[in-house]
Amino acid sequence: MNITADRLVRSGEEGFRGRIMDVILTKGYFRAGPWMYYCVTFENDEIGTPGWSYKVRVRLDDLTERPSLRKIRKANAGFKHVIAPMRIGVAEEELYVRYRDSLGFEHAPTIRDVLLHGCGDEGNTFDTQMVSVYDGSKLIYIGYFDLGQKTMAGTLNIFDPAYRRCSPGKYLMLLKMDHARTLGMRFFHPGTVHIGDTKMDYKYFPGRNVMDAYLSPLDIWIPADTLDTVALTAMYQAAT
Image (cartoon, rainbow, N blue to C red; front, side, top):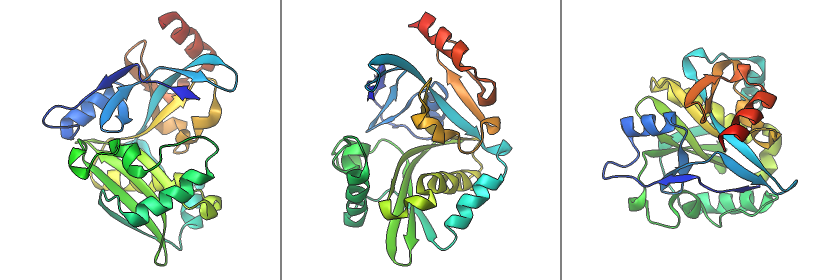
């Protein structure tokens, strides 16, 4: 799948933090390295046709502890986690290499390339934190996220492929949402979903009934459980 940014925004002196982050996430943008990007179209390499995408968010006040969420917590109950400011050290990069090599597609060579396009920490324009999960003393998962004033955006999840059966990506999403609720935030943004392509549908894990979708042709957020694929496709076709 080939995704290109339809619009790219560089930060001002204040960076993408606080209220600025809230506003730009509300308008359908998401992080791309040290910038924010807006993307509606993508090329599906498997079938060679263009497609359309949209952003989703979780309404944290409406989130409930469904059986599927409890099942994920139970699978990871033996692990401990720590939340701290962003760190990109040797242990993190080594875990990333194991994760990257397990993927079936090309990916950036390092975490620093993904988050900062190779720049130093001083080049980070976001308020980035991380949750690290350990099996004993072994680092097995990492989830990076960016903070606004009332919103949190999940940025990058990394995990040891040996623990895939524990659904680490979903568990990291749960830990991020737990932390967002502790901070009194209203929304958690997990990223992009593609119309007619189910690869990104795992981002609906918290439940469509507690999530919204941003429809760029209308510049509105609507409840995700009211979406209709046929109507969405027609809307985006007419708008592009």
